[in-house]
Structure formats: C-alpha cells, structure tokens
Image 1 (cartoon, helix red, strand yellow):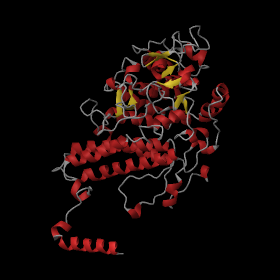
Image 2 (tube, rainbow, N blue to C red; image 1 turned 45 degrees about the vertical axis):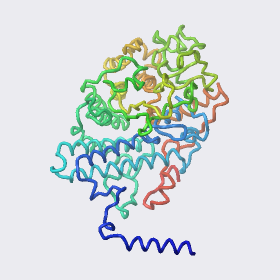
Image 3 (cartoon, one colour; image 1 turned 90 degrees about the horizontal axis):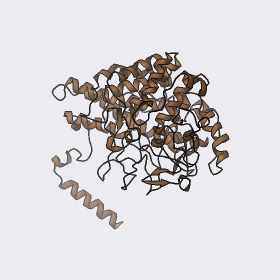
Image 4 (cartoon, rainbow, N blue to C red; image 1 turned 120 degrees about the vertical axis):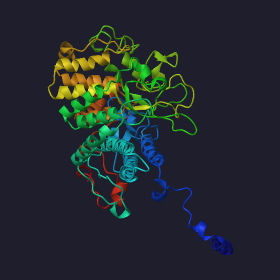
Length: 514
C-alpha cells in the first residue's frame, strides 16, 4: 500500500508541475492524420507501408513457421510439408478447421494490407495541389488500388466470399457482412480498370513498384481465374505489347544477382541485413537444401526429356540421374539425386524422403543466413503472362498455331532449347487436348511460384491431383509420407476464421463449414 501511494503521489507532482504547453503536445511516437498527411513524402511513406505488408510471411514470404503463397505449392501434387505442425500441412491433409493457423494468419494480414491501402486511397486525393500534384496523387492511389486488388484476388480464390471493405472504417462501422465472390471480383476488376492507366510505364527507376505492366498482368490473372477468357487474353496481350522479354537463363532468373531484368513485371522485394527485410521463403540450413518442405516425385517425373518425350517414352531417361537429358527447367527447379548442389554431387535421398528438393529461388552459392536472403519474389513475370494468354486461348477455342507459338517462346530460351510443341505432341501425350498441354507447361514453367494450388482449385482437379493421385502413387512409393484425406466440400473453400466470427456478429460462416 505504501508503495502504491508513493507512485500516485509522484504522478500527481509530475502532472502538477507540467506546463499547459507540455500537456498539449502531440505524441512523439504515433502518427496522427492531422499531423502526418502534410507533404507528398508522407503520402509516399503511407504507400510504402502498403508495399511492405506484401513482404509478410503469410503473403509473399514464408518460412517453416508461416504459410505464404509459396507454401501453397506444398499443398498440391508438387510437394508436401515434412513436419505435420507446419502451416499448410493440415490444409493439404484435409485436417484443418475454422481455427487453422494458415487461414487465420492469411486473413489478418490481408485485411491489415487492405486497411492501409484504403487509407491511402481515401486520403491522398484530399491533400490538394499545394501538397501533391494531381498526377502524383493519381499514381499513388492507383498503386494502392493495385495492391488492394492483388490481395482481394488471393482471398476470392481461397476464402471466396469475404467482407468487401473499400473505405476507412470507424469502430461503429467495423461489423460488416461478407460479400459474394462475384461481387468482390467485379469490384476489383472495375476499380483496377479505372485506374490502371495512372500507373507508370515499366522501368527500373522505382523497381518493385506497380507499373502499367503489373496492372495489366493482374487484370489478366483475375479474368483468367474467373474464366473471362477473352478479357484475360486481351490484358495479357497488353502486357506483351509493352516490350518485356524472357530472361535467357532460366536458372539465373531466380538468383538475386539477376533479379532486375526485362522479364520481371512485379516483384516483392527483399534485402538481407539487420535494418532490412530479408526473405526466408527459400531458406535452408547449412548445406542441406530445403528439406522441411519437399518436392514430390510426380513433379520431377512431369518434365520431358530433351527429345521432347515423357520419361515413360524416352530412351534418354536415367532413374539413377533423373535430371540428365531432361528439360533444363527441371535442373533449375529441382535438386535431384546425383545432381550438383553447392558444387558437389548430391545424394538427395540422404536429405529428403522423396529424393527431390526445391532449387528454384535458393541462394545456392551463398553461405550467409539463408533465412535472411536477398531473393525477390516474382508475383508477375512475362513467362507466366505468355501462359495466361495461351490458356485463355485454349479454353476459348483459339488458334492452335498461336498457342503453340506462345509456348515455344518459353522452350526457345537460350538455356532451355526444348523441341517445339506441335499437334503431334498434343495428340501423343495429352490425348489431343491443347488445354491439358498448356496446363502441363504451366506446371513446368512456374513450379514453386505460388500458383499451383489455385490452379488445381480453379481447374476443379484439386481432389484428383493433390489427394487421389497423391495417395495412389506418392504414398504407395514411400510410406513415410503423411496421409492426405478429402475433407469434403470444405476442402474447396477456406473457412472464415472462428476468431473473426467471434468478434463480428455480421459475419456468417460458409455453409460448407457450418
């Protein structure tokens, strides 16, 4: 009691001794709207806060304890997580619930990003010409709208029906019901189309910021994901017309020494250092390689041999050295048995239960902290844009020759030089389906770029590929791999986190999860 009284007495003396000016001073540590938004630099700083959220380990970074979009590839037929507690493991096994950590952390980070974007979008136009020019204000708002659309697109492809929050909310307005997926998609398409021309032309001056190329690519992807084939092809062509070019070295493309190049359209930037934000999405310990999330044999087996034939047809295939005489993108994507890793012939089975490990994005020559890396993550690059247009044309009955020409650009890279795709390949190996051929090429080109999970989901083959095929083939060949089960309709739509339902009575859980 004596101690409490002494503290109260001291506080009273201090307050009484403070001048009125001192008591009226603004916070020296917090940013307030009436003191912050006074210069163009403030607007740029607020926008930088939107970009920085993309670096979060539940969005475009990841590590063994978090589950960004890279981890989603390991919930498919491309890979699995080695330790059952890892984020994404429960989703891939059909064991997740409304309290799953991957889903709740993703939800929280998405809305934190959306809130930051909304503040920029709503506030910057009110600053006036004496603080910021109309052109600069329009560009900053367009960049924030791009980020917001990017996040909502991820949410509509996983959680689907989500609250559509487009303005700054008061506490009283915070309880909001979910909107339908179609309404959210229509909003972000219209919103982005209305501002995309305010984005700057591509260039290296502000590398890592959204440009017209990024805006067009996002519009292509949103339309592709929602089966608007004509619009997807049109926006993809607008990206192509901007003059991007494929980086000739497919392996080098994913090394930090080359990350500023003419193929990359929009990266999330990372930089190693005590005062920076380094990446950990492709991290590993020592010389082991990435063995806490392991590539599955089916991915490795899907790469053709250099004679243009699958391994089941080619005389060039050697199971002892799986990457030998194969599509060079395989060796750039995967570490396989008896391949070179960090300068030495590597026995992958001594480190991986599957015999395959991710090479793409890894800092193979660097001995510094691999959980604080310099690797940028490419959200959009020309290689995938070519595939988006090819898929849109294939799905809508477009010209086979045009589709083949798009695919053959990828195969003609200096470091790839694979035989051209033609109708004979489609007939012989894809049952005559150009759509299946394009999907195969998309898997080969973009493995471990955070796209496979959504691809399987939107194609309606998530159960077939990530569950049924896995259980019939992968686990049968290696009993150490964990079981995967089909949860039912819940597997196709992520739940609204229970923590959100508890605090927002206006929210209703998806019917599949009730």
